[in-house]
Length: 346
Image 1: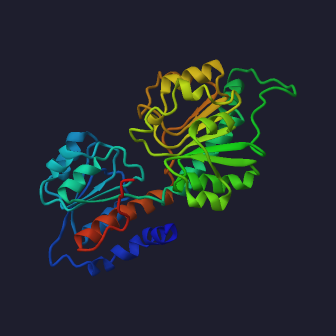
Image 2 (image 1 turned 60 degrees about the vertical axis):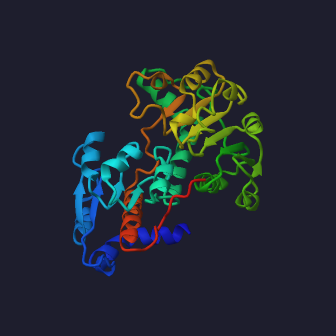
Image 3 (image 1 turned 135 degrees about the vertical axis):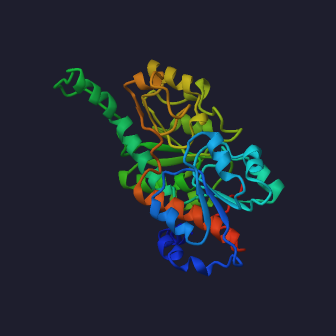
């Protein structure tokens, strides 16, 4: 499935220039709105060949709502709340919206169902880049990259055998919270590290996990037994602040927590406390609350916390793949076809 989606994404230039005319709009030029201008101009120009395209030039919600007014299709490229207010601002002619994300915690999917508006997103294509950054954060946190850099900067580099010892990955027990596409891809990456075993937890047991030798356990068991814990589940009412003072206390003092999902899954003050007091060894975070993170946030003062600014999908090819799928979602529906990647609320 993923191979087909990525192949479709990478074919976007060929599909849009000139074969976009193969989409039958009945002589009508659909009105498209793009909610962010930070997209290669050549791709916007391709859309403009067959559609009337308005690109939001500002960054505020008011700018976005003005841009989408009257649109038949929207390429929603920001993490701004996509809700009844936004759909009202667009108008009753709106037929389809596609986000450029896999996670949809900022989207009121019920409003789309109620109004009969098609909703697409970009699943699967994010699996590889997010899994890659998860592994990078695991290694950086376990081997104390950030703390080591601080030691160099402050002239505290010591030359002795037991200085700055980190945690070993080979033979370790890895726990993955959320064994969807990203979680499964993380495990694929870990196979090359000779880990001892993999535990996972989620709403239900996954047949895919049985095929790769991952064991389904409850959250408490996973936290108690894992040396590395990856958060790769969606942010929902059930998972919000799942990692709090009580659950963090279940983890090994030598364990490393990696979050590549959503910041809201972690009670951030509780995590800061756990890292300061040595309840857990270290953390690697690509997501946090809020985003952007305040420059004075206590997370940034912790030597055992590696923080990067939500870079999970920030690669050149990932951007183009995600934009391509977003555009194809919208264009397909406006041409009377199905969504290429429909959002199906789990």
